[in-house]
Every structure is written in structure tokens, then in C-alpha cells.
Image (tube, rainbow, N blue to C red; front, side, top):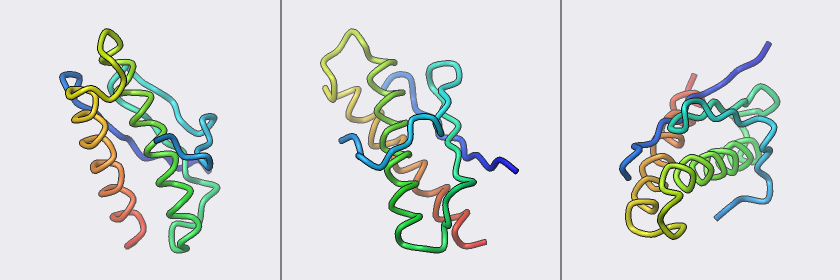
Length: 97
């Protein structure tokens, strides 16, 4: 069984070594589906691994949607922060189940 969470970033708007880019699918340039079926969300290690995937997906979305700007310029940085916050919120909700 595959489990995915969706991370959306505003189009207007730190890569983690543990991020598994095979578990990340970008949809429409502003949304990422992040697989977590291989992760135990009730462990600190699992949360750390998913956090890395969330940060990597946010980087992929936010630097692609603002490709004409320098990476992590103001709109890109805002996008990244919003996307990571959204992903972490979803991770916490999943972990509390």
C-alpha cells in the first residue's frame, strides 16, 4: 500500500541528505506528492526522514516556480517557508493518528 501526503506551494511566492527524491512527485509545478509508506511516523527517525523529504519537495517546487529569480530570493524563500510549514503540519496530523 502506498501512502502519500500532498504539499502545495504558492506559485507567487537546505536540502536534507536523507531526502529520497524517488518518493517525491511534482504535480503541476506547485504541488508535490510525498511518499511515506516506508517511514514510521511515530518514531523520531521517521519524522526526521519525512521532514527531509518535505524540505526537498519544497525546494523543488519553490526554485522551479521562481526559476527566473535567484534561489531563495524573497519570493522563493517565502514559498519555501510556506511549503515546509504546510508539509510539517500534515506530517504532525498523520503522526497523531
